[in-house]
Length: 464
Ligand code: GLN
Image 1: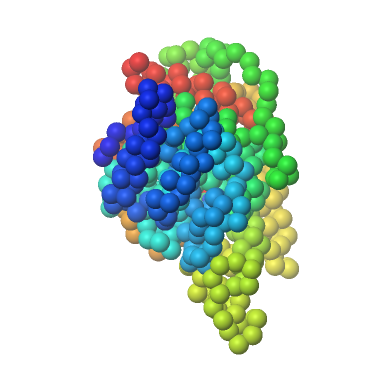
Image 2 (image 1 turned 60 degrees about the horizontal axis):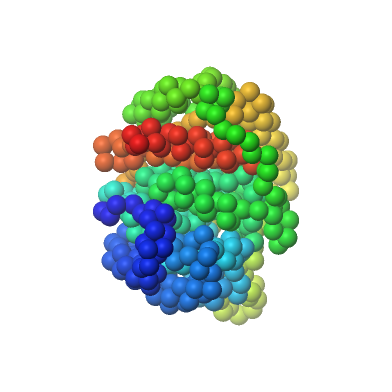
């Protein structure tokens, strides 16, 4: 496996006079030779077309830097499949806001990465284009749903990628592939041009090999956007950072029932932060046990409504029937995979008359309690530290027959989506051949504290 790449190294090569074309060719070569099935679309035309556009932004912060994009984010004139057969022939008619912003900084798009269909999954095995693989062992999953993005960054093919995170889809694959992944505060990054899964939870965020690159991309893609009415301006009040003034909360509920080796490793991380001067405080988030069930009601409910638009008329695939009704039925039956159908059924069920109050409405109330619990905890501590995943990467096929097992991979990640807080997955060494990861959850719009804390940890971990 290649060494993971840094944006600063690429920028240095370009500032020393190297032609960015070389870098793009070299990256395409690595991506094409990859056996990890981490791209759905990796045709040269996108990269070279994008390089031409980038040349108009030579002073941009990402001029000539190759970036991979999850295949649910629109790049104008190129395919967006969302890992689904139903969008196999769909060409994006416009750029997502994050793409416009990256273009203005001279970034070069290398390809569209593999993902679970419509971002529903934790392993990237629910892609209609075959599973992506873990760069540390191709018999294992890279995590999901942004598995393609994390796998290509983890394998050192590209320095950075965009993913989307509705219940952990940036952080879980980042953990499994030994890279950093940020789920920004809900509302801090525009969702315009991201294909909707569960609109009240979805956020786009960066995946990269170090925290500086995460911060760089986050600063570029975040900010208020008139095309997304839920987007908000960043928190300007940022203030000096002193680790001795930082309080880190450790909620016991997130350390129960996890792999003991991960538990021990995270204990070491907590000690490291303590030794560096941070105050460590035990806290309790008792409603944690309801996070997964709450998420798996709200997310499918929103998905069932968002996915109603794939009817064989307006977008993508069309299987013609004898009338409109049959066309819709045939198209959806043929176009959607198993997991997506399962979510649509769960979602329609929890929203149906007679069950709405018992399931959907109750889940919304529990969500509010979870959010209030986080708000209360964060009056007392600046960040919360928990594992990113309860286990190490699992084998391809190991959980595919058991949806509940698959859903439980998200126990550490869904709460931050339900509450809206920012959360960063940070690698903390290896357990046998697989990477281990911890997660820092911050106050809404306080990504900066997560970055600063991680920079200090990174230096300590790497002995620099
Ligand atoms: N694994 C979760 C799900 O299947 C989260 C997916 C995501 O964050 N997009 O819904």
